[in-house]
Each structure stands twice: as structure tokens, then as C-alpha cells.
Image 1 (cartoon, chains in turn cyan, orange):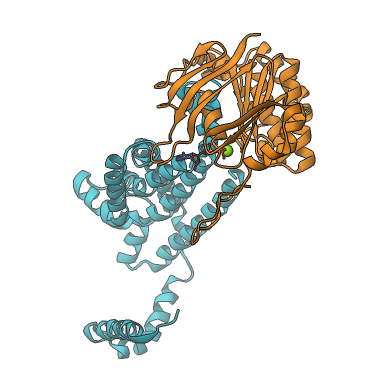
Image 2 (tube, chains in turn cyan, blue; image 1 turned 120 degrees about the vertical axis):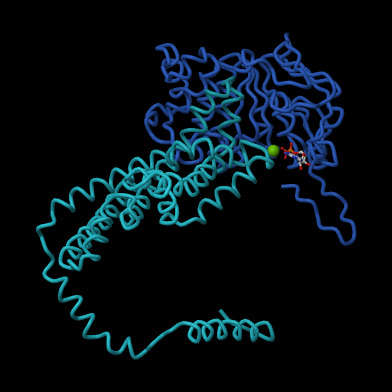
Length: 252
Length: 260
Ligand SMILES: Nc1ncnc2c1ncn2[C@@H]1O[C@H](COP(=O)(O)OP(=O)(O)O)[C@@H](O)[C@H]1O
Ligand SMILES: [Mg+2]
């Protein structure tokens, strides 16, 4: 990127101004950062060795996170099928798909953790607010993906089946669905991966899952136990990604 | 001899287009004939064939296909559609489905909607599909996915799908213009041969005069939505063909219209 002429000068000045403003108005005490070295070492020291006795909690927490992700994804799929159709430009008129797309963009803009906090307030602690939050949050993306899958279908085979005398449902089954299915499968798996990753931390706001234990152990200064749970989370994320890569390869 | 296609004073303009794509077109095709629509791109060949296939509405004039008049304002009843088969320039296959599945798709209009939805072709349907594959020389490709095939193989699949439909009229829109010359000759021979063997009428479009000459008994020349000539192949003369492809007189400041 290159900034040229007066416009370039203004852009550079604005960026410099933004950085300066952030420094000046934030209480960045460099001295605190300098003296933090030993404290960080102490903190890390207390995390080691990780306490392996929390295996039971890890299992219970990860199972709950997995359930939140599965049911949350299911909820998102159920919401995304009708919303995806309503957001598709080849299925409905602009008067319908424009507002629906705006609504989906609005949903996507709300962070999951915020939705989860609101849901905890509305339905109380536990996995239920987590599931609702994941379903709601994921729909913003998944319905958009489904709409794109519908719109990406090539029209020619549909015309060919129409020409052969096949009715609308038969065309949906043999010309539209075979084109859409792999895209829908890939998008749903991708969203499930994101749901699983994102719901790992839902417990921090009381919306169920393994994050609950991280929060509990950190608050009670049991850093060795928090470390074990953190390692478990990292292992899970890596495993999810590996499984997802393998799955996605099947749908090309 | 009975009439397969009868078109009388047909005019049509696409929605949003300022010039008509078809203007006062009249011709007839007898049952069992093999006729070529010859003309440069933009002549109206695709429009005419899609219209005969019942996929365009809002035209004026009189059109009757296989003895039944087409309604200018609504598509033909689905029971009549399988009688007219269509071969598309871009093949129009479901790329991710198998060759056999695509050929069976040609049977969908001949099945009850329930059987079609349940996806259970009868022995008879399967037999017809297998015969069509064999006739097109691709019996060994039945289980292959279409996206793994060459262009020539794909058009053979599309022709097999059309034959599985058991049409009495075969419309083909530039069926070989995406193929190399050798493949083009083979596939067009297959298409017109299969139509003849089944006693079906064939009406195909082409922008290549030599292909039209080799595979049609009669040639209808089109330009700018009108019929320029309609002659038996033996009477086609080079002047008429040259006239069909004559470039529009260039106006100063305007670019030439593509005629390939
Ligand atoms: N969907 C469409 N909308 C508007 N104009 C069209 C459409 N399809 C074709 N046309 C116009 O109609 C005329 C005939 O086109 P077409 O039937 O495709 O000719 P050909 O198949 O001989 O090349 C052309 O001028 C083309 O630009
Ligand atoms: Mg064309």
C-alpha cells in the first residue's frame, strides 16, 4: 500500500493521530510492564506442573461444551433453512431478501459472549443459555452461507429437467439439491467447528461448558488446575481442526 | 407426411430487449426430417429452439409442436413435455451426479411424480437408460461422475439423457459448438443417426455451414431474427451462406458486430 498526494498525507496523519490518542488517553504504565517480569514468571511457575487430578472435571466440562456445540449447531441449521431461503436472491424478491440479509448482518455483528450474557440473564445459568446463544449467533453466518449455496446453483440443469417434464419438487431433488448438498455440508461442518471453539469460553459467563472450570480455578488461584484445563482446551481445538480438515476433504 | 413443427408468423422479444429476437418467422418441419438452423450468433436460434421447447412465453403468432398448439402465455402441460427432447449447447448436466443418474433424469417426466421423488426407477426405466448409454457409446462410463468427463463425453451423456426421454422431436441448440472439429462431427452424426433410427424429427442449430450441410436434409438460414432462406441441403449455395454471415456495414465510430 502506498499513500500518495494530499489524500495520502491526510490518511497518514489520521493513523498517527489514532495511535497517539490511544497512548495518551490509556494509562499505559511502562514501568509496570518492566516490573511485571518476575510476577509473570511467578504466575507461570504456579501453573507448573499442571494438576492432573482435574481429569474428571475436564471430561465433564468438555462433554458439556460438545453438547452445547451440537445442539447449538442443530438450532442454527433449523433456523438457517427458512432464513437462508428468504435471504436468497433467486428464491424471493428483493423486498424480502434485502431486509432478511440486513437482519443476518445485524445478528453476526453481536459477539457470542454478549448474546450468552443476555441469555444467562434471561434463562439462568447452565448449558441452556449457551445452546440458545450459539444457535442465535451461528444463524447470522449459516443462513447467509445457505443463501449463497442456493444462489450458486447452476440454472442450466434445472431448465433441462423442466424441459424433460419434471415438476418443481422433482427438479429440487435432482437438479438443485445435488448441486447444493456438498456446499451445505461443508458450511455446516465449518460452522460446527466455530461453534465448538467459541463455546469453549461460554462457561466464563456462566453459560455452561469447560470454560466454567477455567474461570473457577483462576478466581480461586488454583493456577495448576487452570493450566490443565487450558491444555485440554488447546488439545480439543487442535483435534477439532484436524477432524474438520478430514471431513471437509470428503465434500469437494 | 405429418407435421412435427409448424410455425406461422412468430414474433418474440426478450423482456428488456429493444429489438425483437424473432420477427415474423414461418416454417414447417415434417415428421422424421433432419433440419439445421444456420446463422451467426445473435440470429435468434437459441430463442427459437427454447420457444419450441415451451420455455418462453409472451410471443405472438401460431406455433404447433407434434400436432398440438403451444399456448403463447403458458408452458405446455408437463405430460406433453417428454415428447420434445432438448440438447443444450452447455450440456446442462448435474456435474456432481453420475452419468447414469443424469441419463435417468431424462426419464423423470415419464414417471409418476411420486416414483420420481422416491428415486425408484423401474426395470423398464433402467433398461431404456442403459440402451441410450450404449447407443451413445458410453455404456462403460455409467458410474462415472460427470465432472470427470471430457466435453465430447459430456455431450454424449446429454444426448443419452435426451434419448432416454423417448422424444418424438429432438431440438438441439448448437450441440457441438463446444467440441473440437473431429468430436463435433462424431457427436452430430450420433445425434442425427439416433433420431433417424427412432423415427424422431431432429431440428438442430449451428453456426458452422459445413456441419449443417453434412447432417441436415434441409437448411433454414437465420439472421437478425428473420428467416433468410429455407432450402434443401443440395440447393444451398455459397452466396446465400456468405450473405448470412456478411458483416454489418461499419458505421464510423462504431465497432464491428461479432459474427462468429
Ligand atoms: N435473455 C435475454 N434477454 C435479452 N435479450 C436476449 C436474451 N437472450 C437472447 N437475447 C437477444 O436475442 C437475440 C437472439 O439471441 P439468440 O437467440 O441467443 O441468438 P443465437 O442463438 O442465434 O446466437 C440477440 O440479439 C440476443 O442479444
Ligand atoms: Mg445460441
